[in-house]
Amino acid sequence: MNFNTETVAKITGLSRRQVDYWDVIHFIKPSVADARGKGSVRLYSFEDLVQLKVAKSLREKGISLQRIRKAIQYLKKNMPEVSKPLAEMRFLTDGDTIFVITKDTKKIIDTLRNGQIVISIALADLINELRGKVYEIQEEKSLIIAVKGKKYEVLLHPETEDGGYWVECPSLPGCASQGDTAEEALDMIRDAIKGHLEILEEARKKSQAV
Image (cartoon, rainbow, N blue to C red; front, side):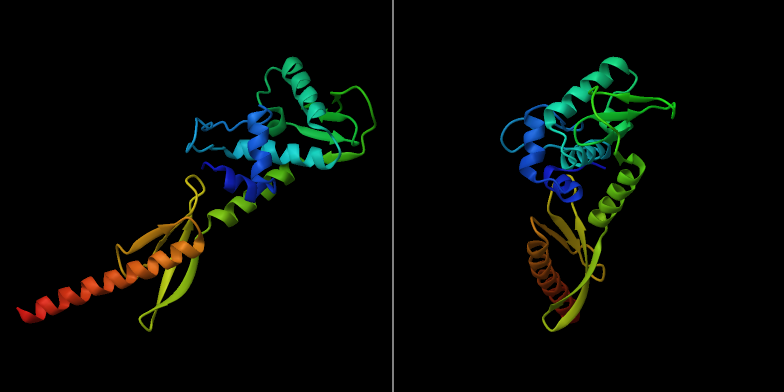
């Protein structure tokens, strides 16, 4: 599953501007599709979400971007088997330095060579939190709308990659529409239902006339 910038912002709690800025400065770039000019869409993977969330957590603990970059550079240089440290390692910080717990639980790397361990960022808990938010966002919603005095169930599906929503009416096979927002998608499906009903009525009249 891939995620556009808007969806990434909703899931991680970062602003769209911050996500875009981190891409522009080559801090955390989208691994699925990079922006390639006007109209193109950045696409992030779940692993990218983990990196963004860890970086956000470190920033909230008072670690600057410059210090996080320095820690990542140190890890990549000294642990080449780790391609994306922010998504693969467990961090500890006291707001000044960053520590990393290695596979050997007795060994801890101080990536900035300064400070005392007081705060832990548990990667497993963070990943579970992200998965829960991803599930919430991608989960379809069942809604009831009224068209010409009759109620219809519609299913609203978010588009995490292209953005916007698509919506369908299960009781009217083939009746579907889309919109940039949930409200627009619901307005569009109302029009689609009206058109679908008109076609069915015309077909009924023709069959009766034969």
